[in-house]
Length: 297
Image 1 (cartoon, rainbow, N blue to C red):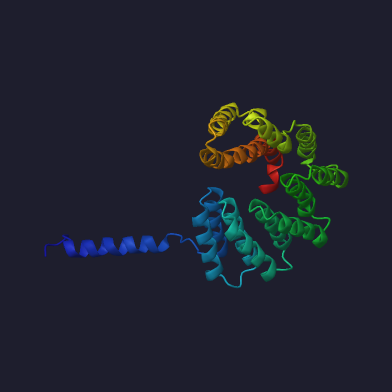
Image 2: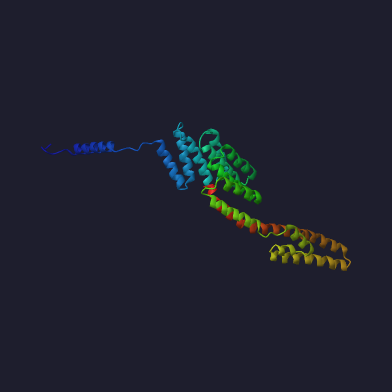
């Protein structure tokens, strides 16, 4: 080896050792509870609910004695709820209550159970659960919001009087509540709902009994009314013509075939009136839900 010349192998070895030393001195991220929760929370905030559930479950497995287990379990239930998986959210919220009865998330979980039942249209269970929220802690924010949710239950079941009572109770017991304005708007919608013009199902049926298709026309379904009138008129005309010809067997057959159409015209008219009522009410009902939608945040 010439004097002053560094062998290439030694040069490579020197560079490797220096690189290893530099990497060893770089700061390393510590995998802690807060890091894992942060990962899950980011997915939740980005509406990546299934990935958020996976990360919260990882937290539960990796940190089984953490004092934030109640938060992780509650967040899993909320992820199901926000993803509109109400069937899965319901037992998840119930588990939070059972496993962490003293946690501040227990009351929130009970309230959310009531909302899940409302979303699933299990109105009676929702009413009972929401009442239990008030029994548990009448001074909590969830107890106040439970009144609004009960108003939704009553409204959806057509009990506008009870819906109004729950809204009035909310306003009386929570005058400075930030959602008082929404409650006032909801009261106005209840009044509007009660004043909507309704079609009588009985009257629709009677009109079609007298003049086939008349009930359909009353319910605003003029095309169906014209068709019902034409079909029944043809059967009636055929029956009458057969009787005039003293062909009573044919008259019986034609009349027998036409009778179901006549009866169906009566029941169909009543159903048309009912559908008209549902349609005209649905717009106000949707507005009512939108007005109180903060309940579901």
